[in-house]
Length: 397
Image 1 (cartoon, rainbow, N blue to C red):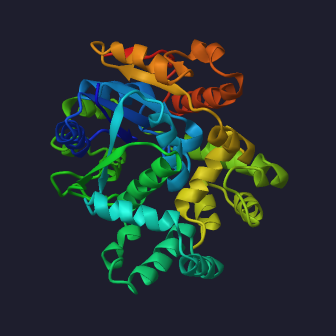
Image 2 (tube, one colour; image 1 turned 180 degrees about the horizontal axis):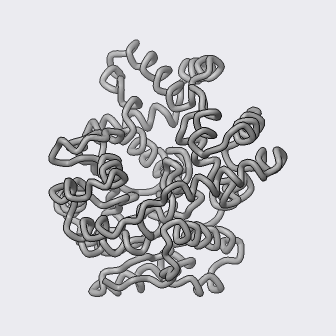
């Protein structure tokens, strides 16, 4: 077996994703495609548009052989930790020779060179990052500015300028860095991103972004999406139920109710941010108002959204450290019914493999809080989507 792995959210799976799936298999000459997919919530701190099992089943119907869940702790993490969690799982999948991802630059050599630079960060870059952080920039912006200033000074690095200004490049570099930290023997394959950019809300291209698809969906413009998503996805979108304000209402209530002491213990909360969040929550009548009151140049909207979900789900620094330091688990959401051989191969590479929730009793005891969190997240998504029949067993497609 020769496998290629893809890290994804498929929220929803678009024609651009389908093209990536096909090219990843063809260009790496892989006979197996694994996907590690975010479950109930996404990296931007938002609810997925549909249950993780439904999205995973579409991926298998459209060419993936197996979909495993990216644990909620990592799915709701900043880019570097998101990448680290996903690569930990991929390190336990059998016969993975390639990681394939989309990027704005489409050049693995440039991305790998940037990854090496960041892994061995010169003191000059570190000092500039500290300077820009002290001036109120967010970490991603501070790092991008510092690196751009550094690479402009050296001819052998000049081609890297601007790489950290684009979100898919950032994720690709984070994947490469995580693989090197984990000492993985894996090659990298990237496809230049087609059509709309990561944050482009327009569907005026052949391959609009998933963000643009979701924007149209929220506006009820379902018909406009027919040419931009596969039929399986379109059928899903026709059944989409808007979450309205229910998730925001739950998150705001939790932010109002939680004590400052507990807020400070949440994952990715530091530097007095808990005080700002508490003041913002107490002064807000809606979730949107809370987000506007809390965000600054330093604390982005995505970071505030993620932290509000940490509060709702109970994701603390301690829980993240557990996830980061523990042996990874592989929770299979969907599997090609003709590829049951993957299960036997997985038993050789991962001792913590689950195909149903009841398998929680078979994995290491320390991992159980993380698995329970994944299903807590699914339960919350089920409430806001008014879906009372939650899938808890791997789907054979």
